[in-house]
Length: 314
Image (cartoon, rainbow, N blue to C red; front, side):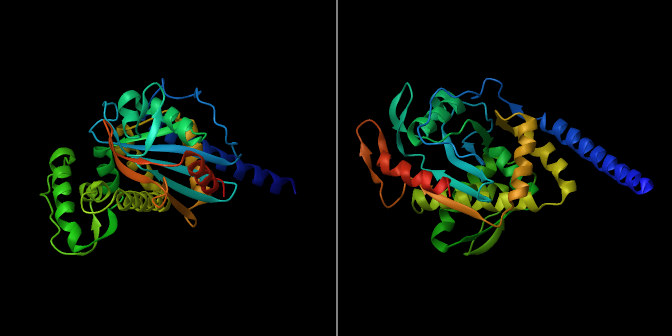
């Protein structure tokens, strides 16, 4: 019996050692992240909606630049919710033209908050207008998005005939501005389902002149979901390569240790139940131009928040 107990302790010691080795290894890799030490740690804006234990929100921000430190508007804003209470993942995309009250600035388009004050002001804008208890963010630029998608082997998407002209125009723009590879530009000439490479996938989520902002944000959610699925299901030995190539291009205020914990939470939840929401509700918003503001999307703040939190907390 004593020999058996000793054997069990040896196995546990080996497993613990492996866990520590892998933990230290990935922690060191994550140190390549651009961690914003001045980022939002203790937000100033209190939220009136209750914080539900087991539900964590991370603001994902895509910026129209080749650097996450550049002063620019946020091209895409999405709330990633890891819900261990209901065992699901939620993706909520926010319209860049949503008319919101930016603290210290006044009513403007949501996309302008990042240009005025970076991720910190964008977080405060989210907390004030949407009453979401979020303080963590991840900012990714266009170049790193291309690297990430290429690392994952591309993203599957369908294109219709009427989308091709706008798609190829934006894809060619992305190729010239953000792509570092030696391959020539690939133009898609007929409708169908394709595995898009990095700069093509960026075009797929950016193009908007061929349809509506809602269709554009739906494409963004679909791509984020597919990327999330691929990262969760990729072979374990591929993570180090992924981290080394992508993380140096990402800025966040989440420290490496907490990021590892969030990663394990995502692995635990899995991808069997990924839910999506477009906000504000396309059927309830009022679209139109305002003097000095341009084209904006106005929304009913009280009912909008109720709808948002009902989705986030179930």
